[in-house]
Image (cartoon, rainbow, N blue to C red; front, side, top):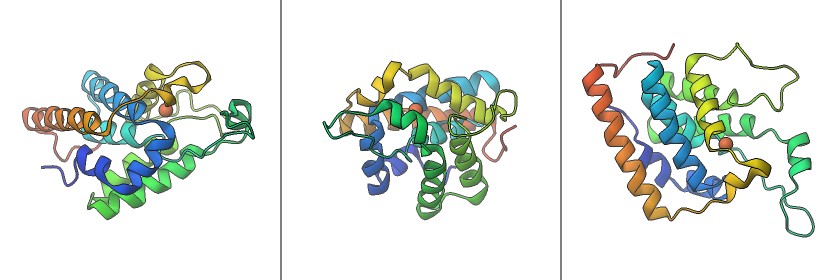
Length: 182
Ligand SMILES: [Fe+2]
């Protein structure tokens, strides 16, 4: 059985605070995509869904003086993957996640993008990290519009509860409860 569910993570006030910036819709959608991709590729489904749910938790607000999102400033100076990895790790440990899971999820968030790095991550990611990147990219829209799609909190909890049940069923059927990601 898993120590922490997606609903546990989502209901925590830290998650709610930071996902409000980057978009609940994007986070939930990416978590579903990550589950599907993880099943296809034989990657740990629980880690993939959790990392995708939290992958943008490190976002700052990048509004200019007119109150509009300054996308160019964001592209040049953003380090949300670093902030997100640290926030996610702290949150997961507080919620009672085991250290192995917390580490893999956190590092997947750190490496879900190379936009802040002086080198490309192409071909250097683990299968789990690649799944999180692909899940994020699958929901991405030009100029960051995916961050603005709306989803009610109650709807997010309903969908994440469904995804939790899918993950539990998958782990029981495949007996991969303690399997590490490749
Ligand atoms: Fe994202």
